[in-house]
Length: 170
Image 1: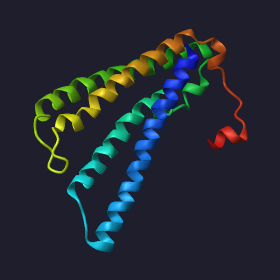
Image 2 (image 1 turned 180 degrees about the vertical axis):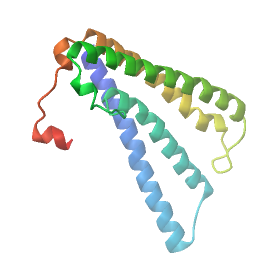
Image 3 (image 1 turned 135 degrees about the vertical axis):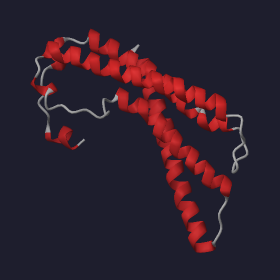
């Protein structure tokens, strides 16, 4: 099961990295074309905005999976491992509630505003706005996975870890 999860995570990360790479190339391209040749295309500019939104919401999931979300650990690090487990579960619960609210309201927004046609790419805005609830749902699944992982983890997983110099720089 862990092997399948690892493959899915790598594919998910690959999609995000490819989108980020494409975004970087297109932004450079549009800037060069605009400032050197006075050329611009509204469809390419709009696609850049969509890619930016996609990478932002797509990476929500990666932040959850890699524990890269914002946290203040000054107090957390002083707790014993048993308390750390409960604090982690509480944190994931708060994240879950916030993400569920995000999905609900982004879904409603997509339903209301998604019938409009975009000016640049001339596609329904639901394709663009739909990025938010879809990524939010994936994020909910990952938060639930992390909660199960937290419950099943041995107490030793919550003990202070000695960091190597290499890990400190990552």
